[in-house]
Amino acid sequence: MSAGKVLIILSDADKFALRKPDGSLAHEDTGVFLTELATPLGHILDAGYDVLFASPSGKSPTVDPLSESLLVYFGNWWAKRKDQELLNRMEIENNIRNPRPFGSISNEELASFAGVFIPGGHAPITDLGDNPELGRILLHFHNEHKATAVICHGPYALLSTKYASSSPGFAYKGYKLTSWSDAEEKLVETMKGGEIPDKVESSLAAEGADMVSTAAKKLGGITVDREVVSGANPMAANALGTKFVEMLRAH
Image (cartoon, rainbow, N blue to C red; front, side, top):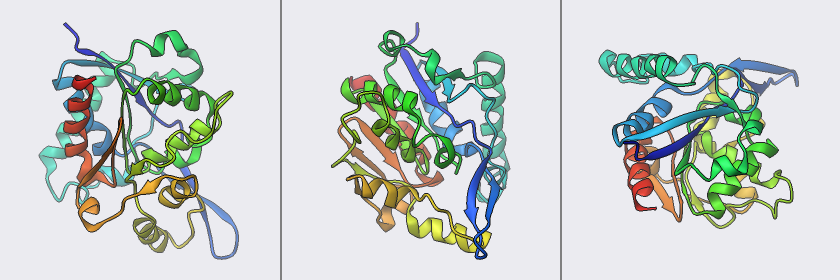
């Protein structure tokens, strides 16, 4: 018997914008970050929850090519293979290759979900932060105090609550949140040779979120405030998955 249902939010994007020193705009490869999706997903499934994948228009998601590097797994080939096999299993058993478009999920259907999870990769900064239908979805989980897990660039999606129909504004003003930090993004900018216009940490802070970015958070610590658990980067994926399940069970 299922413990309940969890909605997993994915991006349709496979590129993100990078402004070059000459003012031109380049588009860098991205997608969902493999272990940031697979590790919490494993915890959710092991706890007996069913999952449904959703994205802006229902496009099959792309895996961020950087996230498939063994460097991300500190050389642990078995851990990478485990994550890839879980996503392969979702292709067979679930709708990861055919996510539900946000607009197809009614308010009545939202009532059937216990929680929502948004993984990272740079993709969310392209198409999740200003999506009104996602804003409507997230406002449901916020207003009903249902467990909400976000990691790395995933927290950028919370900004969508500003754009929902009849929205009172950014729903997470005053919340303590942890995301991929501007300092970490600066390293990516240096590596890519350009500027990423939309940064997660400063964008959320500008809307009133209380961003928590300490050495401990960057090394895998998580932040919990009310119904939201958040983490900075892939090192937080395991702790975030564990805490998210705990919060699902407590609701």
